[in-house]
Figure (tube, rainbow, N blue to C red):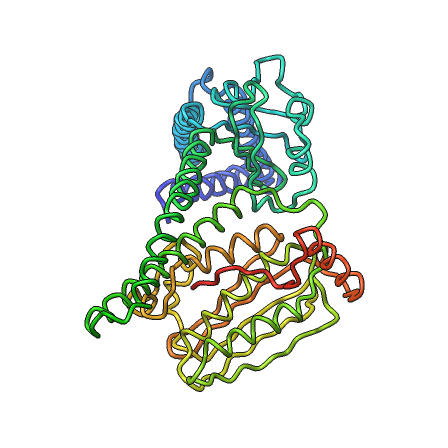
Length: 462
């Protein structure tokens, strides 16, 4: 027990004994006990009154002093107040630093009111990129200031805002802003806008460079291939020189495949997707790919199983889908041991359709899976080159799926095979009308000059 409490209990005991003694002398113990107890209660009420006055006045009123337990109560409350004041000062300093940091950020930051599109606060970058002016725009709805249709759809239709959007700056149309909304603290939202103009210019420069270099390499490679073929047809070379020429021809063919893939990737990145995609007979596409896969397998005699829904069509561009699907199938053939099982499926799912390729091959380590769709990334450089791969196949698959609003899912384990799934949304799927699809493809052939081969001739690589 603390000393103030011991003193208070002693004070109560002395008070009671005094009351008993005075009551005994006066001949009325109850009356005098009541008087002393009432006096003690009034003393406590008086100290409660002083405490409330001190709390109301705060710093202006001096800390009350008393010789009873109330002195300890006042002291503890005073220390608690001091600690709270110190926390408030620290919090104010922290908020000021945080405010200075957000103001100094190069990205535009806009805070929206809870459950509303009204603007509560923005930093200096938002004033530069979005043209906000204080106090004119404070409290305005952001949808009234940023009128881009893409932004309005993003702001009102998104729920989790996982993806960002790019729009021109309302201040300068030459600036491109990448905007993302971040929900936080319940129903509050933070809008972050980043200037992507320089990145876009660099990306366009890269795309133009790749497209131009690929185009320029095509002609000399064609000439080299022609001369090598001519030299190999000659009979005057010894076996040693013939082997060297065949090796050169093989590497030239590989260079041609790389150039073809680079040009295809460049087209996929820059070309606008079809506005009105035609339905594609996927089962027939898969048939053609499987026939080529069996030829590629050759003496290794892989077992290829099919589970294909012939009544399920996909809206899109047939040549691009052929390139994506064949890359996955041919990769499975290349990296599955002789006699291994490869399963190809084309089925409807709850949210669309799925094309999947599953093999019993060597598999891929988990840490390498996120990088598989990068250009020229190889799990095993030696193995990829020995199978004739360019390292661009899965990058092509990724871009084709993006153009068809799909996404790629990869599952794999070392020595336990791999599974690649191409997911397509419901709006890209349809039931096959075989007659109308055949007629549209026949029209395309006639337009192209009477070609009878409806199968797109695309180079297919790893």
